Structures are given as C-alpha cells and as structure tokens.
Length: 115
Ligand code: AMP
Ligand code: ZN
Image (tube, rainbow, N blue to C red; front, top):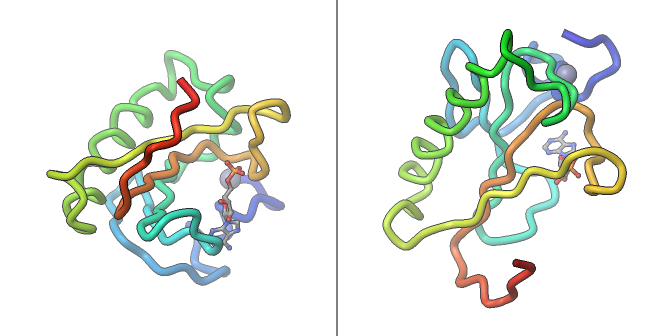
C-alpha cells in the first residue's frame, strides 16, 4: 500500500471504480478514459511500482495478473476473438500511474501494429 497511489486508493475502496473482476490478489476495473470499446485495467493488490520492480519475492503477482486477464477477457466476451494487452513501464514507456497494471484492450480489430 502506498499512501499517494491512486490505484492503492481504488483497491482500498476510497476511490470508486467499476469493478470487472476481483480475487484475493488482483483487482480489475474499467479504465476511466477508455482507448477501445473494451479497456480494463488488471492491477495487483500489492503496490509494485512497475515491471522494473518485479522481483523473485513478488513475481507471483505477475502470474496471477495473467490468469486474471483471461477472466476479464471472458467476462467481456473478447476471449475468442482476441485482444491486446499493454504494460507501460516508466517515464519513457508512457507509464503515468506508478503501480504495475495491465491494459486489456478489445472489442475492435487492431490493425495498427507497433511491432
Ligand atoms: P498508464 O498511463 O499506463 O500508467 O495507465 C494509467 C491508466 O489509468 C490510464 O489509462 C488512465 O486512464 C487510468 N486511470 C487513471 N485514473 C483512473 C481511475 N480513477 N479509474 C480508472 N482508471 C484510471
Ligand atoms: Zn499503489
């Protein structure tokens, strides 16, 4: 838990969110500024600043986030058609909220390719 972290506030419930999926370790909620018809954030309940802060002690949250992504995709009915997952890491990666999160994007066909 980090006092001035917006996602920690959402996890503790003091900032509202539109929940999509939750378990003991992961919270998933609608992005407030959707970039696609489906845009859901998958967030570890432990405050991990970014992918760069993943280590052997907290890496289980990464596996749990991946399983949660599948649950979100099914709940949003994009699991069969497919979807895109993005993790921005650090300033140059475009990360604006310093709490590790996965963007799950879908409900459209992504034709634009970065890689
Ligand atoms: P990033 O830029 O990769 O760090 O992603 C942060 C994401 O959090 C952005 O897509 C924002 O729209 C989203 N976001 C910020 N505040 C909230 C909030 N209170 N509820 C839901 N999503 C939020
Ligand atoms: Zn946090």
